[in-house]
Image (cartoon, rainbow, N blue to C red; front, side, top):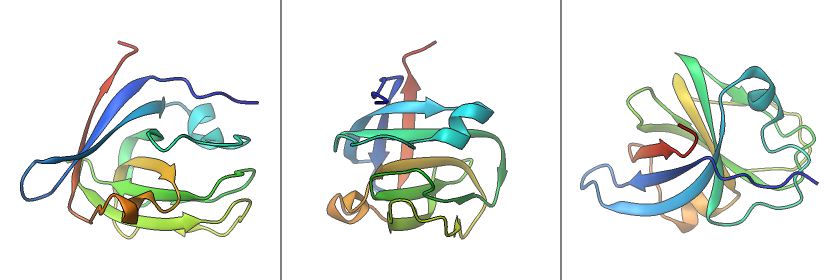
Length: 133
């Protein structure tokens, strides 16, 4: 079983006020292997955990749920760290392409349903620190 490995802390802030909505522990996927594997083969993800994918460029992104056992909210984030798009409650094992609606440099995966539960919105911002550096 693949276990969560805390590699950073991420805060999600309201677009208009910079008020922190939620702070979570994150794993960081920033190389080819990690970005291709993502949260595959995991049996669970804690509510206060997520995975942040960091890409070297900004482009339209597309994710799928191959070999992923848990439903996820897939949040696409622009280079300026603003949420630009979301795919909610992506179904486990579904290989349907789940594209972003705008170019993204970052992608945050959290448990399915949390985007709505936390009352997140397009335009909200993230900030993160890595504990690896």
